[in-house]
Length: 362
Length: 218
Image (cartoon, rainbow over all chains, first blue to last red):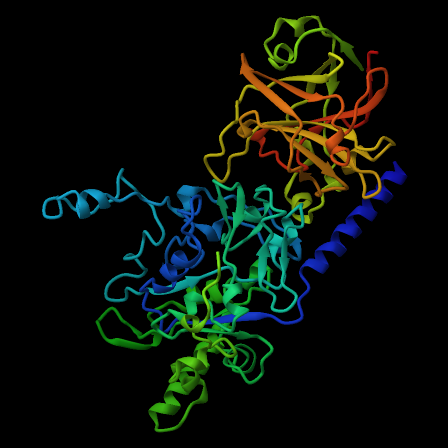
C-alpha cells in the first residue's frame, strides 16, 4: 500500500503540473464594463447569439447575458450554486438545469407572420413559460420611493485561475498562451460537465445535441484579426472596454490597476476573473419625510460590496470625487476615459472593422 | 474466468435475452469505487466522497465465442433506468470492458500508461446500442476510435440491465486500436459500471479493481 500511495502522490503531482501548463499565459485579455452606462438593451446578448449560438443544441445558450440587479440572475440563483475555490481548495458546485437557464421558447412566427393571422393572434411563446433569461427584468430592489435597479452584463470571465480548467478530468480546457482566453477543446471534451459544476459564475452550457460543453470564446477568431468581440463592438452604450490587462497605456490597465475604479465580480470565488466592473453610482435616498438624505445612496453599498467586494466603497468615492471635480469646472482623466468620446478608445488594438475583412470560407 | 466456445450464431448471442446465455457460465464480480486519489481532477477529489462512488456493487459477467466472434454479457441490478440526457444534471447508465491493448500488465486503476495502453469497449444507455471502441494511455486520456468494431445490444427489465458486447476475435485492420483475441489463449479483462442516477461519469464509477484472466476455450 505504501507503494500505491507513493504512486498516487506522483499521479497528483503530474496532474497538477499538467494543469499549471494549461493555465499558463503570457498575456491576459480583459474587459471592463461600466455599469453606469449599461441601459439593458440586450444588444450585446443578441450580437453574441447571432454570431455563435444559433446551431442545433445551442438554442438555450446565451454566452453573453444582461440581468437586472438585484435579481436571481442567469441561470436562476447562480450565486447560490457553489463552485470556485475556498481557501484555494476547489469548492463543490451545482449543475444548473436547462430550466435554471431558461428554455428557448418556441414562438408562433408562422401563424402570425405567414398564416394570415397577423391582425388576430398575438406573437407568443408556446406552452406557459415561467422562467427565462432576465425573467425578473422589471423587479429590481428597494421600496418606493427608494426603489432601485441596475444592469449587470456577464460573459465568461476568462479567469486567471479557472475552476473549469481545474475540474476537467480530460484536460480539455486551457488558456491560450498568447492572450489568456479560456477555451474548451471540442476534440477532448466528452461532456462530463464537471466544468459546469465547478464554474462559480455558471457561464458554461451543455450542448445536448453534440454532448459537449460550450461557452464564451471571447470571439477569439475576431481577436486574431484585430476585431473586438461582437458584444463589445455592437454595444451602443460604449461601456465595454477590451484590451490587454498589462497594457499600461490602455484604459483597462488604468481603470483597474491605476485608478482602481473597476472591480471583479465576486472575487471571493477565488478564480481571479478578468472581467471588471465600474460600479453603479446612484442618487441619494429619500428619508421617511420625503426629504433627500445625501448620506445614503439609493443602491445600498452593502449590496454592491456583496457583488464587488469591500473595495467598491473606495471606487465609488473616487468616481464621486472626480464628478465633483468636473462639476467645479476641472478636468478628469478618469471621467474622460469612461465617457469614451471616440469609440476606438474602447478597444486598444482591436479596432479593425469586421466588415472590411474577407469572409471566412466555410 | 472462462470464455466458453459455443456454436450459436452472432445474431443469437448478440441478443441479451437469447436462451443460449442460460447455458453459458457466469462469474459474479465484486465492484469497487474507483480510488478518489487517482482522479485526474482536484475538483473531483474535493467534491466527492469515495464512499458514495460506485453504486453498482456486483456485476455478473458471462463470455462466449464461436470461433469468429467473442461475446460478453454483463448484467447488474439497477432499479433506475437512466437513458436519455434530457437535462444538464442527468447522466446515463453505462458499462465497459477493459483489456491491455498489447498484452503485458498495465495498471488497471490508471487506465494504462503511455507505454502500456489499454483498450476499452464502452456502452452507454444514450448511445442507442452504438458501442464505442476506445484506447487509453493513462487517466483521462480515452479517445474513441473512428471505426468501431464492437456491437452492443441492451435490455432493461425487472430492475436489471443486460448488455451484450460482440466483436470479431481478430480485427486486423485496427491492430493499434483494439485488442486481438485468439481461441486457446488468455487475456486480462476488467470491467466498469456507471450508475447515471448517482451522477457517475468519467472516472467516477465502480470497477473490478484487479485484472481477471479470461481464457478463451480452444
